[in-house]
Image (cartoon, rainbow, N blue to C red; front, side, top):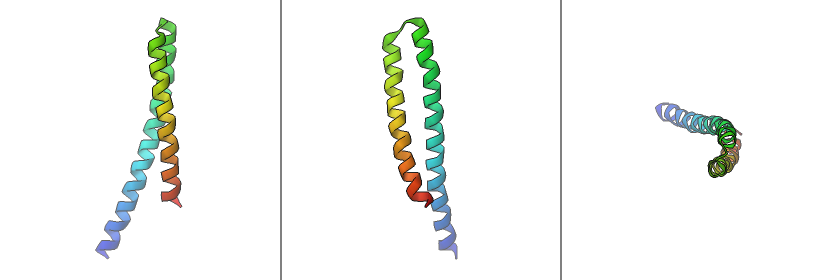
Amino acid sequence: MENFISHFQGENVERDDLISLFYRTLKESELCNQYIMDAERCGNSELVEFYREIQAQDRLRVSRTEEFLSRHLS
């Protein structure tokens, strides 16, 4: 019984970690929108490009996390 419980908790931890990563990445991407607008308002095209690169990385991370979640939640 103890092995079953620890195995079950392990699965929940993995799922919860993925959900947390998914959520934090979405929030980070949302913040980047604000940073992009700030940089545009200040006329800093270098920072605009940097934040857009970060957003592209975030989109990839979200996509990969969705793949893992679909496998772990099914």
